[in-house]
Image (cartoon, rainbow, N blue to C red; front, top):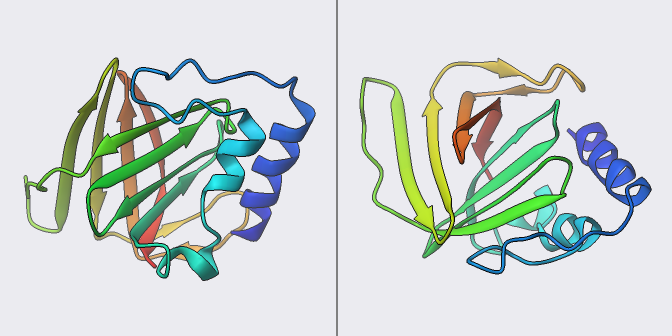
Length: 145
């Protein structure tokens, strides 16, 4: 997992600085700042994160906080948005789904209690995650922090 975070940071550092066009509800930061704003795995619980999901190609990460919000960054940190925390639904046994909207963005997260392995690092996770951001599907793995 550290390899994924390092890869995200390296790509973000190599990219020309761009402000995310998310003034309508997003974080509105440069890629480096968006990545730095996400707490480390070690500090995530203390920061209020309940669940974290990560994926690659393109690199993405999302944090579901215990109270009030979901933060997502994708495209190696070039895009980011913050969504209100909504009540989850349970569309099938072993699955949890969140459908949220922020001005200009939609997010649908499906967490399945099915083992998952990060293809870049080989790290194993207890859940597979599908995040659909503005109609674009990203797949990855996740766990409670």
